[in-house]
Structures are given as structure tokens and as C-alpha cells.
Amino acid sequence: MFRIPRPRSFLYLMSLRTGTELITLSLLLNKVSGIYGLLALLTGLQLSPLQLSMYLYSVGALILTALLAPHIRRQSPLQCLALAWFYILDSIVNAAYTAAFSLTWFLVLSRAHSDARGGSGVPSAGGPTMDEAAGFTSPEFNVSGVHVVAQPAAGLTAGQDAVAVAAPGGSNPTAAAPSLGHGVLMPESASSIAIITSLWLMRAYFTLVVMAYARSVLRVHMHSMSHVHLSPQPNGAAPDSANPFAAHTPDGQGWQGKLGRILVRIGRSYWLGLEEDVDGSDDDGWAAGMGGRFEKNRERGLGGAAERERRRRSGTGPPVPAPAEVQRAVVEGR
Image (cartoon, rainbow, N blue to C red):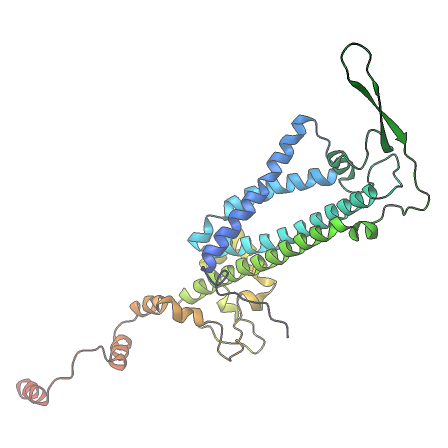
């Protein structure tokens, strides 16, 4: 069965929290471009509806990311979970925009290398803007060559006058019409495809890191709840009592609790469930590496007979009295 990878560190060099902070910072820098895109409208730049929607989305995503980013260090369960889901959705939206504009750019390249140059620009999303910015797709003068004719200049100074004469260009009836397949097979497209593929593989890894950090925050919060005992379930899911956003818990009250229950409902076995690693041990081993502070916090609440029993088993209780002292205490008690 397919199992979502769960990184335990960022690039094997940094913690998941540090990696999530760096990823969120890169997301903020990426979304700032939406503001500059909207400012470009003041200069008279013509944008297609798709480009305008992308810039408006970037501004909204910038605001939402700025609100959720401070909660990474605070380890707030709801906000970290919301950030993970937003990063997933943002990756999907960016993939759609990247695909649309990539197809347009390949059509631009195909049209630039084709002799079939018509009057209008690239008939696709953002085509007119790319057509204008690229410069080589719709030149002002359609010529196939330039001939320089030199002749002696009149007057006392020796020299020559040069006149450039353009040879009219025409369409080649045997040339292929601009198409997506033609643009993808162009030499310039190979580097573009390689860069896009590399960036999206990196984006997929970043998504796994943000998800893994949100999951660890949820598990830390679940482990700190003294009344919850995490145990593996037959289907890998967690019991209802392990849901930190359950209606009877403090974090499950109000609209935030409803939102949290909705976010963990999809992929519940990943966010809340206990699954076994390849070596057979459960993936809750992070608790052992946290210095045992959660167990210590839980032990501070014990008292009376339970505390004495714990100390007796751990060997940290008071020393056993000598037999002579026990006999003396018995005699004195009589």
C-alpha cells in the first residue's frame, strides 16, 4: 500500500521546524510578485484575465501566509495544519498556472521558428503580453534579409553612403504551422522543461516537509493530553479521543474547532493515525527523542500511592531502613 513519505529532517541538515520556516519565507517572497504585477497596471501594461487573476491570488495568498507564518514557532496545531493544507492547495494552483503559461511560451517559440507568421498574436492565455514582451514573434517589419548598398559620397570628404534595402519576406507554404508539439521539440524548450521539472520536484519535497512538521505538531499536542493513550488501530486510524479538535476538547470549540475537524477529516490516518515503520516500530519514536519532557510533565501530576510506586520501581525512592532501625521503631511503637 502506498505510504506518504514522512521526512524527519529538512535536507538531513536541519529540523522540520527550521525547514518549514525557510519554505514559508520562500513562499512569501514568491507571492510578493503579485503586488508588483498589480502595480504594473499603473504603467499601462495590458494583462490578460488569467494573468490578472494570478496576481490577485498572489496578493491574497501573501496575506494568508503572513498570518500563519508566526504560528510555526509557536507550534499552534490549527494554524500549522492550515498552513500545510494551504501549501498543498497553493502547489496545485501554481501547477495549473505554470502549465497554462508554459503551453503559451511553447507556442510563442513555435511561432518564432515558423515561417507561417500571421497577423495576430499567440491565441492562448497571456499570449498578447508574451507576444509584445518577446519582441521576435511579431516584428514591426517582416523581412527575410537586409542588403547594404554602398556608394561614394558627394563632397570633398572621402567616404561612402550606405543604404539598407529590405527584401520582403514571405511565408513558406511548406513550413509547419505553429503548434504545441513543434514548440516542445524546439532546442530552446529542453532547458525550460528541465528547469520546470526540477523546480516541481523540489516543490513536492517542500510539501512533504511542511506536512510532516504539521503532523509532528499535532502529535506533540496529542501526546501532551494526559487522558489520551495513542495505540495502533487495525486500519491505521486513531481513536476519536485522539482528535485534538474533538468537540469535547478545548481546541474543538467554536469555528476553529469545526475547521480543525474538517482539516483532519481528509487523510485522518496520516494526521492522527499510528502506522508502523518498515522495521516494525511505530512512527511515534519522536517522543523518545524529545528528552522525555512530555512524560515528565505527565508524571508531575501523579501523587500519593502512584508516585511512591513509580519511585520504588525506578529506584529513586528513599533508602530501605536497616533491620535494627525497624526493630527499634516497632519496640518504641509498643
